[in-house]
Image (tube, rainbow, N blue to C red; front, side, top):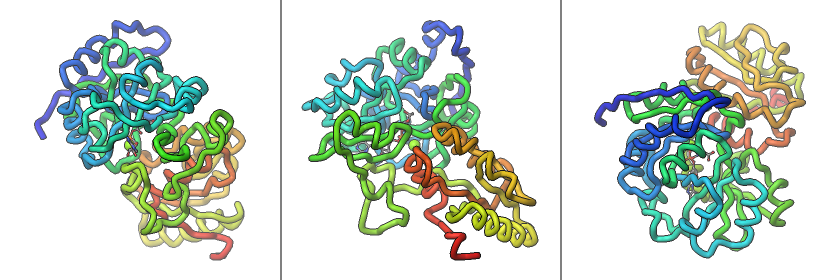
Length: 358
Ligand code: TXA
Ligand code: MG
């Protein structure tokens, strides 16, 4: 791929003017690529209705082109321009959760090119809550196709530095709005089938959705604790190995004491073999681990913030050259599906039950 000069512009959230975004907006209008912050993760934006821009996004990320992109909009009215047969539920969900970390799958109109939807007849649409993202959509006058702005297979980027590390020289522009808020990608709900289906768990939970539209089910593949050859995830992107740290990650389940005892024993063995180890824990449990690098997701009592540093921690372990990582499990927290779905993928589903190992 040809080398491109990447410009990075810092934006001060508290004082920026929409016109500060005009250079980036102009690049998008000319078919270029701009990475920008959203409330979930950084996105890699291109003109959603321009097939060539979509092709450039796939090339920059090294992403398989059957994996469709999410189209970002800045007002609910754009729904009708991109999608047909929009059901009532979509408007009810938009009313409750937009702008915000929810993506809806709807039947696409012909104006959305196959290059953006990976050949699917449906389109993923999201109205993000980030002021910089919204300014970019408005100033460009476009709908913006944006996958997470990481190189394919790497953890999603939650800072502009992560984007720079993965995509410098491959895209024109990065808008740096500081670290994101939520830290995992939007919840995806498919409204094109008989029943609403969650294709990717996120900050907006099943319970949140059910309060607005009644029964919602999970795509079985995204909540399964073991990979099952016969169930393929409905969102094309969910079937790929993802978020992969460079070292090996193992999820350790069980009582707090047994988890700590098991991990400490493994760490001792690995350290003796010359390995570099690390543990993903919480503020409450971090002191239980000895002779290893412990990175904390935060306080278990602040459950809704536990996603914030998840991907950043995976990248931090890479930077430290850690080759063996262990993580506690988070099945008992409100964002359990969102967190554990990412951890299972990062771990390639490797899980140990410490209660059985001790
Ligand atoms: O929070 C987010 O959603 C972030 C920010 C940047 O908005 N974006 C994001 O995009 O996570 P990406 O491309 O990394 O993930 C999009 C997921 C993929 O798993 C893809 O397969 C699925 O959405 N998807 C997109 N269009 C779809 C469609 N028409 N039907 C089913 N799944 C779809
Ligand atoms: Mg992604």
